[in-house]
Amino acid sequence: MSSPADPGGGPARRDGPDREMVSFVAVSLLSLVTVLAQGVPDTFLQWFGAVVGALAGGVAAQSAVVARLLDRGFDVIRVMRTVRWERFRWVLTMLARTVLGLLVALALVLVLPRAVDWVRLRLDGCPPPVALRLVTTPEQLPTARDLADAFAASTADGNKGCRAAAVFVYAADPVLTAEAVRLGWAAEHLLALGPRPELWLPGSTYFTAGLAGLPVAVEMRPVAATPVVLALPEGAEVGAGPRTRTWSQLLQSSRRYDWSVARPDPAVSFTGELATHALYAGLDGLTPAELERQLAGGLDRGGYPLGDELSLLCRHASSAGGAVTSLIVTEQQLLRYQRDRELGDACPPGGRRPALRAVYPSDTLGLDFPAVRIGWADASPEQDTQARAFLSWLDTPGGRAALAAGGLRTPHPGGDLPAVEFESTPPSASSLATTMDSYDRARRPGRVLLALDTSGSMAAPVADGGRSRYDVAAAGIANTLRLRGPADEFGLWAFPHVGGARQVFPIENRQLAEAQVEDALRRIRPQGPTPLYRTIADAVPAVRTDTDAVQALVVLTDGEDTGSGLSRRQLVDRVRGQGVRVFVVAVGEASCGGALAEVAGATGGTCRQASFADLEATVSDIFSLLWKGA
Image (tube, rainbow, N blue to C red; front, side, top):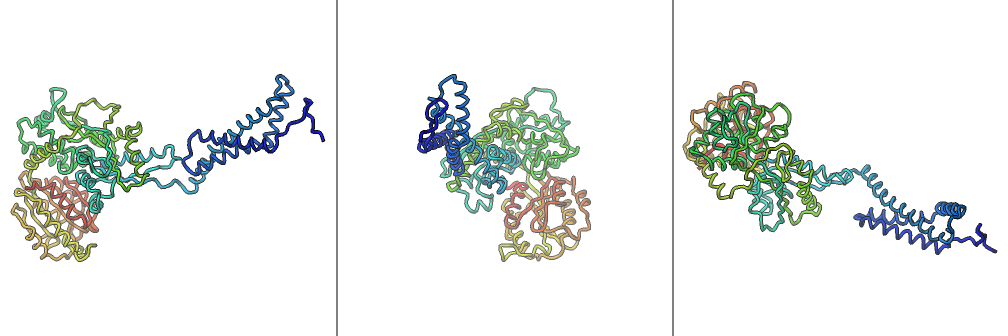
């Protein structure tokens, strides 16, 4: 049989199986090469999509539909007869099929993985994010939380809306943190500080000086800075004079115009340490003791706590009139105050905050703000990747915006912050130690009465077995006597007792041995109700004196008030404005969530929630604030 003739008179050409196979293989391979040229696949799903897409392109190029479309196109060309296209028929067919195959392959490669991801996300949700731990200082805790949240949110960009990292943020003393890093974060550090961190925001490079040459990889980047300023309230005049003033000149203005100055306690605040270093460098005729009396008076008159800069600002936020007091804080925390940002768990956003404005002393210091990555040898590759990503993110527009929102000055400043020159490099360890030695000699002594709950609930056993709650408390109290100096006064009450509480030791500076206190407490048997309010109301007048000592009542209790005959409001009214700070250590069933926190806050004290495991450390922290020491 003769083959059918085409309209041009020649025999019709048909692609045989060999030519079709060559076309299929060529189109598939070319499709695969084109796909791989866009980037080597990272996952099995991407490889699967690339191969399937290439094969689908080859199949599509050989389909009957494509053949009919090509034949129809050549029929049109023959009718036009402008060029003798027949001689190029096979080449053009291959070219058209190749282009079509490539389009199909690319479409499948782009669509298939995304379609599978879409279905998987709808069925299973996002995969678990990589868990990171970030440790910071108590003063930087709110800012660190904001930065961690902003970073975690940024990891969802380009990741199908799924966050790639989740950052747990907690606070610990930076000196203890640096020591734990040097020692490899052993089991005792897990108990005392918290989980081993991959990231650290220490607030200053002062705390990272000893991390060079460690077996663990430590990467540090400077990311921001902030100066120490004087936050002036309304009514605080500085008078006529030079535009820029030193710390000494500003303190002179405070004495001349009768407004007070409150400084964070250097025992718990590095901002307080830096401020003390700057103030002592320009005393201008004052002695350190005279300066400390002035600053202590500012705390007492305004009812400010013995704490860090966040606690000062939080107290100021709730103040209503009274003494005109300026605060020594960082510009960063002042901006958070002005912008109604969180100032700690006890001071959430919201409410009307009294106005404060910044004055920048010409001889001020500041915090450099480093970010530290700690590359533990056994950390997972995913943790290492995300920890590195956090440091890199801090230097992106998004990271710099988050730092600026937290009140910090970035290396690329913007906004309306004034141009200020300040020394952000921390003082040397030796010079700061010299300053703190002078501070310890100049600070006022403490007059402290400890009221110990000896109600029946204190006889309950604790988890370590063999000891009661009372035994643990008694041992912790005896051990704190080591912090006491010759000028410090101490007294001890136990409650309940007939009429309220019994005096175990009067308030005096007689030196008591630990054994004496332990022996006296051993003779007391826990029993009876908890006349907590009555004890506090009676103890505050007993502490009050005309000396310039820090006057404080420390109450250790495990329960709620029973049998006092006083309401919460009556108690607050009786202790407010007496010049005696009330500190409460709440253990067991006792809580800092209600009356105890209100009483402490109204007197410039604090309420500390503690477990029996860390009871001694909590009591020691409080007494280290109150006692002058040796």
